[in-house]
Each structure stands twice: as C-alpha cells, then as structure tokens.
Image (cartoon, rainbow, N blue to C red):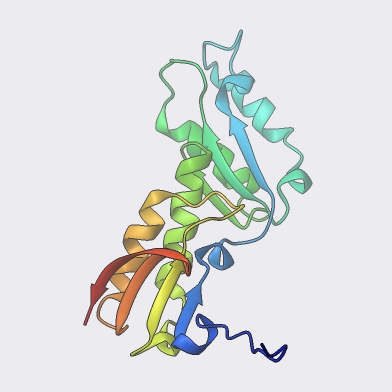
Length: 169
C-alpha cells in the first residue's frame, strides 16, 4: 500500500460558485425610535409637547444610522408626527423607514439586491449559502431568485455537501 495519496476537493473543481447573501447586508448601526416616548403619559399626542420633544432630539445619535420609526403602544398617531421626526433626523441618518426592525431589514436588503451587479454569475452554477450569522429576511431570498433565474445556469440552496437544487436552465 502506498503512502502517496492526493486529496481532491470536488467542490472546488465542480465549477460551483458560492454566493453568500449576507455579503449584501448593509453595514452600519440600526436604531429604533419609539413614538411612545414622545407622547404625554405614553398615550396621548399633545402637539406642543410633541414638537418640543422632537426639537430636542440629538441628531448626532442617528448619524450614519439606519433608523426605523414605530410605536410600541396601540394609540392613534397622526401621519404628520412621522413627518416631524423624519425631518429632524433625515440629514443625519442613512435611511429612515416606518415600521419595525424587520421592516427596515427587508427594505435594506431589497435595495441591496436591486442595485447589486449579478453579471459575474451569468451562466454559472450558483449555490446560495444556507446559513448566516446575519439576519436575512425571507423576502431577500425571494428577490434573489428573481434576479438570478434569468441569469444563472443552475441554482442551488444550502451547503456544498448538502444542497437543494432549485432550478436548471
């Protein structure tokens, strides 16, 4: 028996391109603004008090941040209230959305996928990585398939050792 043997990386030789969707997640801090904190007794929007609290927001806190505006209480908030908060921090924040943290992530991933140049994957066999340390909204995978289907030769999901074929062109 010979001690000479060669380890062959079949995945590397397969022509399979690994695509990690988490590479598209925009980097930067995420901050939420709970409108409840600007309400009188956490329940009532009194315009004068509300405007004063908005005026006192430290815009530097939101510098280069992705911001989501929400209300954790079940109260009626007039639409202009969101206008005021947004107008106060819009020069500092990278992006502001109405909704919760997940709504923010969905929009950020949507923008990232829509602006990404996928041309390097044309006519390739692509494996979309299945696990990530980043939170990836499910909608991002749907949008990714929309972008890749007309472009790639085949698409798989998971890991090289255990993947799920999605389609072949």
